[in-house]
Length: 482
Image 1 (spheres, rainbow, N blue to C red):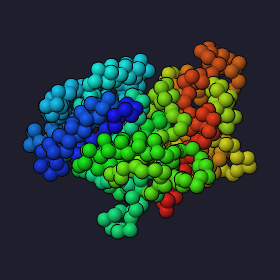
Image 2 (image 1 turned 90 degrees about the horizontal axis):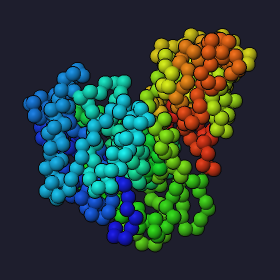
Image 3 (image 1 turned 180 degrees about the vertical axis):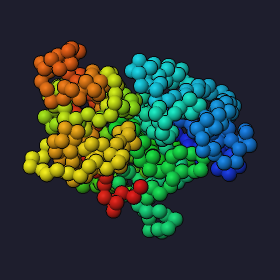
Image 4 (image 1 turned 120 degrees about the vertical axis):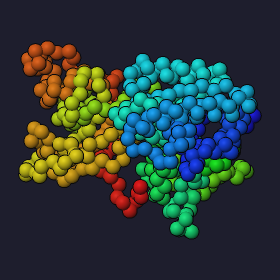
């Protein structure tokens, strides 16, 4: 790849790629090949970040524990023991090739503050500029459910967004995505290129090893997050780390010989056929045969910097339901006024992150059934982080706490840092800004959220944030097998 552009490449390794599921011994053969691949990429001028699971597995081996514990303190104790062994093993292997490394342990709390997020970005930048390979893991020793990323697939995607990576490689125990499980369906076809993750029909029945927390479905969530940040995301086999080098070489040669399918609307051409899923893309010229892999193409209008941090760096503490007028005002770069707020869900304080969900008023709707347990007042299943929220639900004919009726298809459209607390917003919702002082006795701002503290989910073809929001209704089972 001499003479080609230099890239920032994030490589994520799961526990099953690092530690044997049964003996808990480190898989030195794979780790050594990963080290050789990373160093080879470094020598070609690329910047490399590793996201490495395996601390708990290494701790189980060190403490002769056969089964992963169920209680959190025991898991965290094993992670504390295993992380020492894990980073020492990485350092030993990289030292053989005179490659310095650095350890970075993160929780969501570490990047929830904007200053800390920028500090983390600056640390990554300083390390990469000095030719050091950062090795990232979640700080399992202190992480609890409220501040965990959930799995290292999500962590790797957020890391890729933070460092504005060109590639994210999700290494797993299969070569790629297939249209069906190839073990039971001999006619299953490999999926090489995915332009639109929402349209994917693939077998993702792999649930991860007994030592890890991820699976193929979490990799699709990570791919959605990373591609939204402009990162080309690749799923490929971890036992063949050399694939990373070969795939980067292949993609760059492909781009030099043809216009690769992108996320933009297709243009009729006699030389190339574009599809949202492309097992066999048509190419111009001669390119090397690539290793089996699935490549998710990046969004042509990526979400980066502050907008990425607002969407994915913060855990939401509640939900604000807004009307369509308020949403269109946000798209037009105006702030969120209380007159556009329909309802509030949850308890949150000033300057905390919330979900923004759009609802549309329905006129003449009769009374509806009470809200089922585990759902918000509008019938939407309480969602988590946008990158994790793939199974939100909507019900026909819903009501809010003010007994007004709204459409059965609410849309989660983004995140915001609010100026007022949940209780304050409940008191001023639907009012004009001039009325805030009369209700609260004070008015910190005319806005519920400033526009600079709002980040919407999607962008339009013009590069501006637009109404291509995410509905909270799940896709039909026939088109999505998770």
